[in-house]
Length: 270
Image (cartoon, rainbow, N blue to C red; front, top):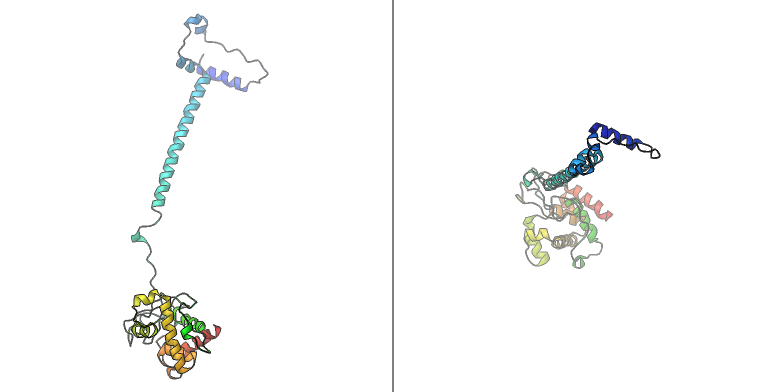
């Protein structure tokens, strides 16, 4: 019997109604005339002559091939994912550089402008006092509001790490204002000695909020004691002179009267 006829009989058996009697399958004529003892016993040959065994063998090969394909695909995907994770961060040479520090107070400052007065620069925010305020308490003076108002002008709200642009001319030529209140390096030795009893370095000043607040409060309360008002103290911080003597003075970005007006508004708001 040929494979084609065997498969056709197998198909008919699959489609046959179970209630019907299965038709007898014609045995190969070559086997009918042989005695039973002479029938082939080779299993492989029997499978070749058995359509069912042939189909099962084919399906098994297909399943094995599919499993091997899925296994290779899974390994390839795992390697690709691992490679993507390794290359997810770009090399250092191609990473975007951090933006340069840009001042953000007193209008639009630029390094081309000269700033001959103390306290320049700006940046984001810190809103509290870190120093011991007890030595600086005065009747009629709100220390926290004083600090907030100056920091709002000088460093955009209180960035203790702020550095101003390089001063191009004047008393502070070549210097960069420092910290939340934008203290000029030229004033730091004298002011730190007066407030702390010792001279501090620029690095120590920049790394300590307590030192910055202490020096600021020491200078501002001295001006308040001398001139009698928070506005005069703010004017001294900006120009070195009280409000009555500072009109018309400017650092190239803001006039003294505007500085005092901005301070006064911020001080009232607290």
